[in-house]
Length: 108
Image 1 (cartoon, rainbow, N blue to C red):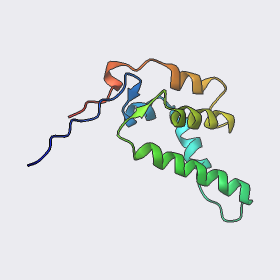
Image 2: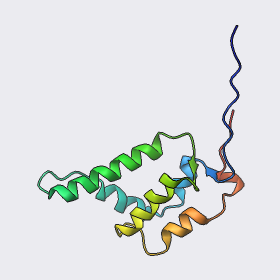
Image 3: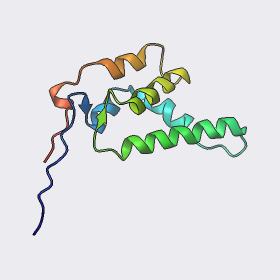
Image 4: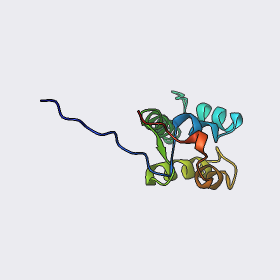
């Protein structure tokens, strides 16, 4: 007999991946993408930072939704600001703006 597994409910602080990406400007997304490129001639620390950005971006793309209150989400966006990829104060705007209805995940 098959068991019914109910879908996991998204918390009130959850938004879709697209909504999360939409909270970044085009210039910010471009800066993040460029910073994530691996340059073989770069110093190891730079290459490690680029790899960390790629890992974070892959983590974001592999999730069902983005929880704006989750420690990993907040830490990742704050790190983008610390690296200078986001202007001062942008992390707070991205993370602390209340989810709008259009941003919320629809679970089926």
